[in-house]
Length: 296
Ligand code: MG
Image: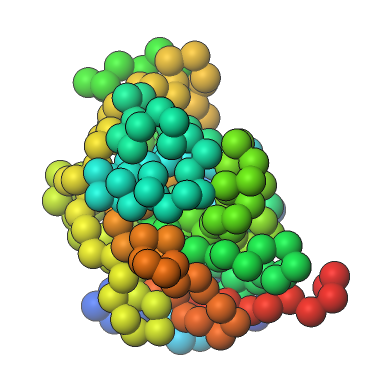
């Protein structure tokens, strides 16, 4: 199933996306239940309950898609340097404050992005050139946790997954390099586009799913989730060893090679650039860069 959070006639709703007819069937939920996007559906599933009935289908062109979880309940977990070629391109960029540990990490590097950095498909990625002049893109498969747990073994880890979406882990490289903790450089307002939909876990083959990015139509990243250094079960086992994972938690699994910092000289994003992140089975997440004026 593909499920989207969207706005229609000024109200937030969640619905089932039908690709073949380009329609969306809104679930009959209250405004309060829809406010948290797909969170309510994840909790219904956890409780062993059926999805709510749907009402009259709307055309996808009649709605504005939002992030499936417009404001996750807590920070997103993210994994750094989790594809070999990207680990090497980043380590040699001069901006890697973890480079002393070697290009390819021995253990997953886990950092976080604040929930308020999340924005939706089609929204602007806003930046202030006085804060950062090195904005970069990172397409990532993001895991959405369904079943809570701590001490989760690799063998059972996928039982805790509700589904997947796309995250663009937008990064201010200069801030990432300046501060040894990556949170500031990764958590700038609007630096976490998510969507365009969430899919249930049966829709994705973790061993073989294409992951790509285009900037202004030029392909920059082209890889496959089968090439992750630490696979999804390992990531879940690592985080959940002592941190209880909760329904609705999001884990971005890392980006492949081809980010702006990997070019010589680097190719950072500028005002008006259009970034399109694609993952097979989920769709395309497109956002445009916008230079902020003043403090607005
Ligand atoms: Mg990343």
